[in-house]
Structure formats: C-alpha cells, structure tokens
Length: 121
Image (cartoon, rainbow, N blue to C red; front, side, top):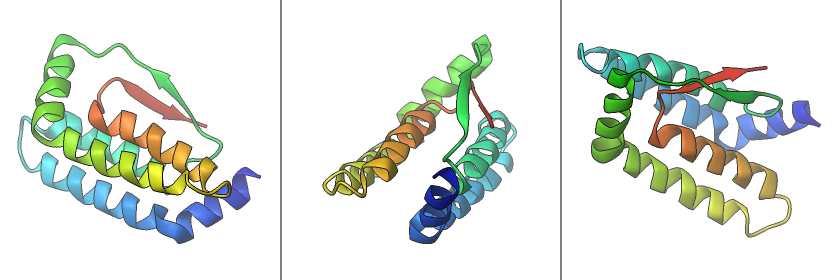
C-alpha cells in the first residue's frame, strides 16, 4: 500500500513540493546563519518526495537550533505551515484524499519548526 501511496503522492504534487522545499533549502544555505535550517530542508524535501512508509523521530535540538526554530517559525515557517495545512484540509474533504491530507498535516508540523526531527525508514 505504501508503494502505491508514494506513486500517487509523487504524481499528484509530491514532486513539486519536494522541489520547492529543496530550493528553499538552497536559498537558506546561501546565508551562514540559515545553513542548519537549509540542511534540514534538504532532509524534509527527501521526506516529501516519498512520505509513505517513513517515520519521524524527535531529536532534542540544542539551544541554537531552538532559537533558529523560533526565528524560522516567526519569519518564514508560518506561511509554509498555513499552505500545507490548507492543502491537507482540502484533501480531507474526500475519503480517498484523507491519507494524503494526513501526510500534508505531518509535513506542516515539520515545516513550522524543522530543526529537531530525523526522518527514517
């Protein structure tokens, strides 16, 4: 089931979301202070590419990473959070879209505060 879900996800927008998250990570890596968030965006883009069948482990962020989470959430993360949340709500209108909507809710949570998560199979 996860293979079929990943294929449908890829075709119906996962590829575009992963590309935009990867580009966001590249832009963040151009600044010295944004490198930790940029590197985490690369991991998140990989997760967005094939989300079904992967789990997320919480990692306790250091003081600097906690500070960067707050800065990211205030200035940039809330916009991404609202976007992914709205797409998740729209997908949950239909029964077929509920698994995809749940994935968008999961991504919205991670994109609001990206530091402190590790994505594993």
